[in-house]
Image (cartoon, rainbow, N blue to C red; front, side, top):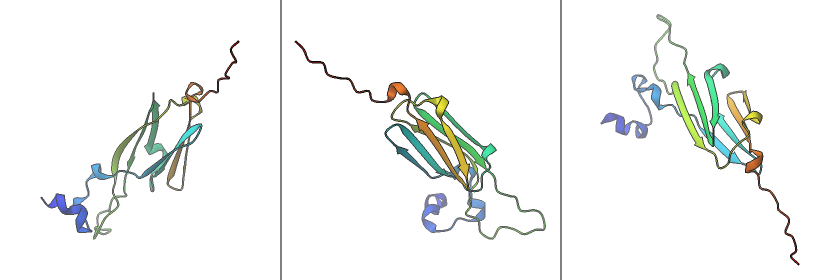
Length: 131
């Protein structure tokens, strides 16, 4: 029952942090010819991140670890920083060109640029006059 009220209590005891609770915050923008995902992933190493696309589903996975407290070096008085694995999936509105996807990670922010596939981009068709 206590876990039900944890989010409203304003503080979580150090032993109450569970690895499965970490969900990174993201923004998914749709532009005319591309989608861009921006994710806040502070304290992570790029080798701990995995980005993949299958059809119109973008998957972002990773694992963040916190440095353990060494014996004799102190104990946690309070800990809000979450750690553990996460997996987020996003349904994209159009097919993307997987060969042109770019991913950058700088200062804790991941950016995934997903250009639309050529067949997914709108094509203007000229109207012919009939005789």
